[in-house]
Image (tube, helix red, strand yellow):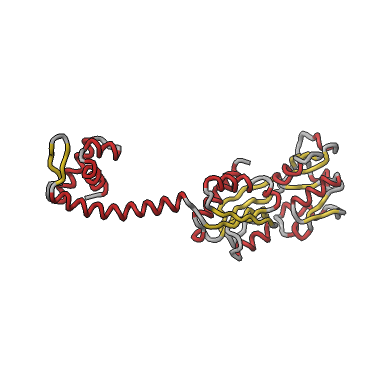
Length: 294
């Protein structure tokens, strides 16, 4: 005997007709009849006798039916539990993001998930990428969206995306109308806001050329700080596209591509895959979906 045969028997027993059982199971009448006959051959006794236009269970069929109902009661309970887990995700998930993503990606992702899963509590923390990685390792965060030069080996990477850096410059700058990518050699002596040199020293090889630039009067560690200072002072800056978009929306600056390949990697990270609850994976999927559309 198999589950399909038992389902056909149970439906026929409950409804009293093959027609009704077939409709409930979305099967054809011949299919239900065949499944019941196969079960009868398997158990070795008749389960039904015809009475008028319907079917009536035999004494043996009713006794067997009680056992089948007991089996399905456990199965139904399992299904109810699974449905409850899927549809009523509860608990709390902590996610950390860098400042610039606070304005673009994360709020939309959280809002969409909160609408679908109102019982889920979501905590949002903002920090730089090294701080976020440490917080995930120390189990203070379940997930983090970080912008790094090297893929973090100590965490489980659920998603990664290359970010190609661009030049942020005043809209009245001579290069603002450039139709070709800007060569870094053309702007290394132009007043700019630099990254903290300690940050550049941890970057990939193609970033190290920026260390040879003349020492800038203004520097900062984070992308958003560099871009904000550049906009406020009318200087140039090299920033990631998310930061550039956020600051350019405020007006007064434009972005242009650069010829050199300066990249970082945007990663969604968590602890080992076996520690990711369904709620954490749901939030990760929501964030990743937003990242894929930008």
